Image 1 (cartoon, one colour):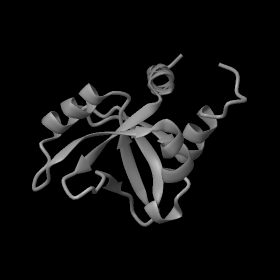
Image 2 (tube, helix red, strand yellow):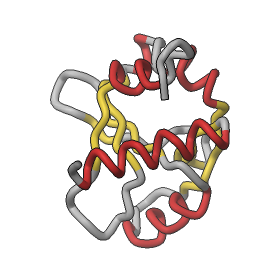
Image 3 (cartoon, helix red, strand yellow):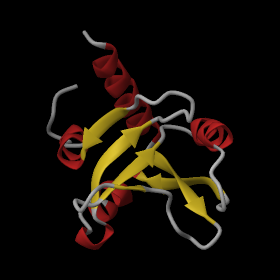
Length: 120
């Protein structure tokens, strides 16, 4: 088993148990995301509030104030990820703002992990 696989499983278990994902939301209701070339956005997501706080502290984002914001898992999966206007292409999982490497899940991988018919 790779470290990435273990990290993915832990993230998915924590998100499923809590029933929500966490994003960084700005004071103007904007969501922190990283633009990919022309294919959309990478959306950082976290499995708990403390991890968002840690990232925001470590990343020291310039000219923006973001706060942890919970999104119910069903809303996130059914509305956010299926909304073509949001152009979310991938999820950056539990970034810490210190390390350059992060676990990346495609939208398809994340949605498949939320399938109620799948066996855990």
